[in-house]
Image (cartoon, rainbow, N blue to C red; front, side, top):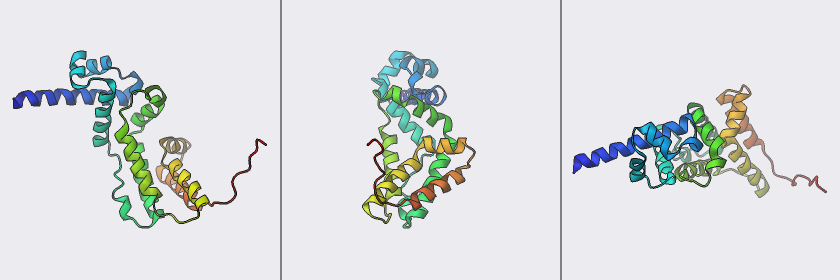
Length: 197
């Protein structure tokens, strides 16, 4: 019984790793059940035995990816009282994660509009939300400044922001410093004028 369970677990792991490899190389939109079965060296019915649908497979793939790609854990950031220091630390770790996993994350961001109906990325979204919460906590300022600052932090955390800045020649540290400057210098005030009038 134990050997049979080990074999099933090993097959499930091989299928999960095959899905992750395809996400990394061709992207989620091209990661069909048939493609995963072929890449894992199993039959389609074997994939379905372990994962009843693409959502379940993508969920396992996401959780596997989070375990092996070094996604930051914001728990340690919360121990940093100063929000500026916390943001510098958080962006440094996040941008290193982006650098290390550029191809995978680029594929996922590119294919996101094509896979919204599939789901399976809830754990990743939850982790990003935890990071935002840790980096957004403790900043001073009135409501208008806070609204702008939260938008700036969200912008600084975006993979697309990091890619845009580094594609234009900035190092990860320079991109982080620029975003830190944006967040720390933002000031509330009157709303932007409505130019449509």
